[in-house]
Image 1 (cartoon, rainbow, N blue to C red):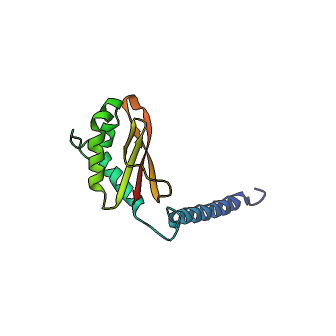
Image 2: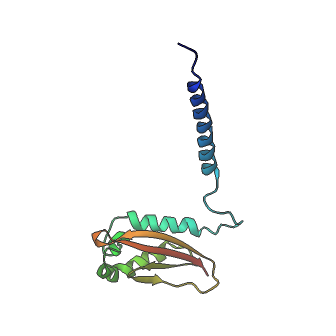
Image 3: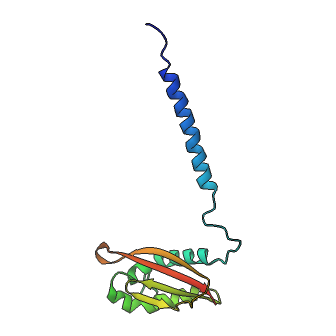
Length: 141
């Protein structure tokens, strides 16, 4: 044996520094706000999330279709779209309006230019696993 090997100490130092950097990055990501803070929160972001959760995970019936059932095909959208729209209207507080935009068509009221709107994009799955880009737009009058 001709001497001590310092390679092990160097690797331990590198691992320590790397660990500290990873922890710092994770801390920064978890402590940052989810959305830019612009000084006002009108609640439309949270409301849109709640509405989509209810529509996605509720039991399905012809009078109250889930969003996945209504968007399964163009025919089901034509049959269930109005019932889905009625359910969305009942979930909204007074003065809040919606527009649900899908590849099969839109329901609800389209906001006028200049209105403060919140648009929540989401993906629904149609027949044969087809991905449908949709969005729920909420706005106040």
